[in-house]
Image (cartoon, rainbow, N blue to C red; front, top):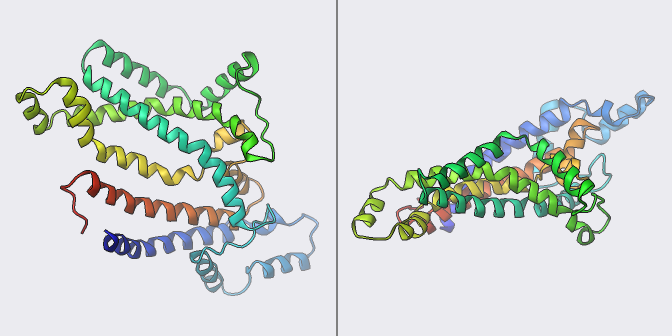
Length: 311
């Protein structure tokens, strides 16, 4: 297993470098950083000092190669907007974003798998049709509509949840994440329920299912034991492929609920005053997580399915 993981890491390293080279060039050379960061009354000398300070002078290839080499070693420098190390910004914002998105992924996956199993158990009957109709209706409503309506009803009208007011302390403010998590789970359920139902229905046509019925195994045992276990590969795939993106948060929820997560910070750094070190740092961490979770997913395939071999 370790040999396989190391081989995959070596194979993925050129991919990481290619992504970093692309995002470094785009961030520093194509986003007009000087005009975004400098005051409009800045003198030519001020602009020249800025270019010199951030390595924007000299040969364009060589200066970007030096930046890529630093990024490959996770040396991102200081954020231009936050005026502090990029690592600190990523850690603080990423922790808040993960606290928002990880419970969402776990809950939506668990509930989605349960609904998929129920739909497969009652396949073709009124319960199955009702669940799929509800899932389709849920998918048809915009994420933004859920945010606006539920925030208006549950915060302003009914007052079940407090108005968003994120403070300086993470522990004292974490309760403001309850409603955003509920909204994101509600939005995800429609997609997850339909996906996992499709997985279960496809699995129900396998030969081992027909054999189990022929041996007299009950319908309940076939659905909730045999079928669930053999459906773990698509479940693992969907779950772990989504894991790296939890770090980036949900910028819509963070913007509307005034949550200082990484998603909100990144949107500001792209649409407002451009902040290349932060953009590059977030991309490097996301790319690294994505490649690592691809390897972990392959390893888990072999754990849940003895027929899979790591070669």
